[in-house]
Length: 125
Image (cartoon, rainbow, N blue to C red; front, side, top):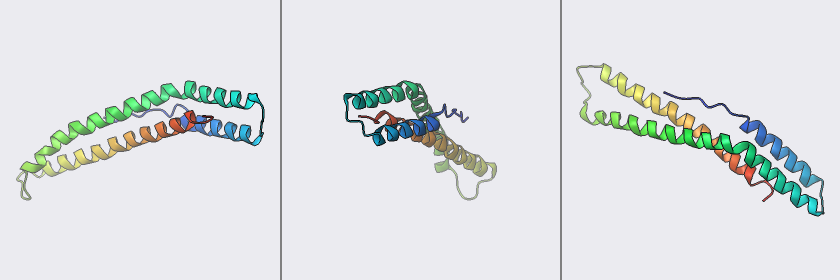
């Protein structure tokens, strides 16, 4: 049910761009080239990261859709009591909650990657 997305270098790219941006700032360039460097770095980050960011957004939306579907099945919770004759009902519902937790973690990870992307694209602006 859960589809793992590769990191696609998002974390490493974020670190590399942040280090490069720091080096540019430390160089204290007072010329027109400073703004050109910032602009180029920002464009580079966007071009390199945008495909992965789109995939992470798509993944998060897919995770949300899966959770919505599972929530429909969890409506059965309103129809059971504490003394169900078929004890497997409790286990089935517990597994649905487990699935939601797993899916939510995958969606959260995609959102964290998107946060890194947003920070990178703000570099130099």
